[in-house]
Length: 218
Image (cartoon, rainbow, N blue to C red; front, side, top):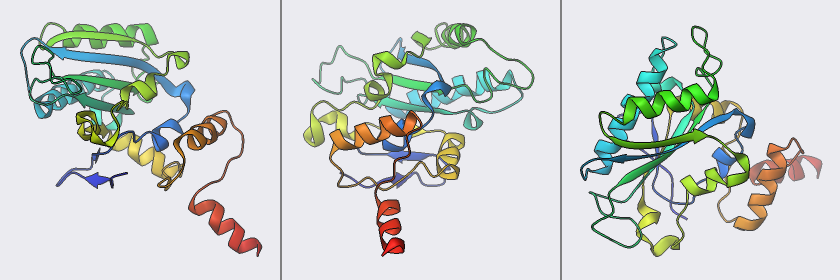
C-alpha cells in the first residue's frame, strides 16, 4: 500500500493509493446525502475536472454563506487526460465520482436543503456548464463508498493511481474524531468488518490504539 501524500501548498489531502477507504468508511453513514458521477462534454484532464468539481461545491456552499472546502465531501477522478482508467478506451472520458455529506447542506444555517433538492441543485449547476451529472440520494445498500474508491485491477492497474481528494473540512472532522487510524498491513476483509461494526456503534479498537491499550494493561 502506498503512502498518503499532501498536495503542495494545499490543505487538501491527495490519496495516491487505492483503495484508501478506511478513514472515510468510519464516517457516520447516516451523514452521507448524495452520490454522484460527473462527466464532461469534451475530454479534459483530471486536474481540470477536480477544479470544476470544487466550483460545484463552492456553488452549493454559497447557499449557506460558506465555501466548498467547508463541506464534507470526497471525490475520485477516474482516468487521465480523457482516457478510460481501466481499459484505456479512448472513447471513455475522464469522469469523477463523489460523495457529499449533510454538513452545511441539509443542516445549513441559512438554507436547509432536502436531500432530493441538494441532488437536483448539483445536477442543474453542472449540466449546462460542463457536461452530464448523475446525482442521487446516497443509498447505503448500494456500496457507494467502495464504488467511489474502487480499484478492481489492484496495485498494477491504472486505477490505483487515480486521485482521491477529500475536503479540508472532512479531513479535519476525521482527525478531530480520531477516525483516521493506521490500518497499513491489515487484512482488507477483517478491516471491512471492523469498520462496519464501528459505524454501527460497536466499540472496536485496532492498530496503534489496540497496541497502546495492551501496553497500558501489562
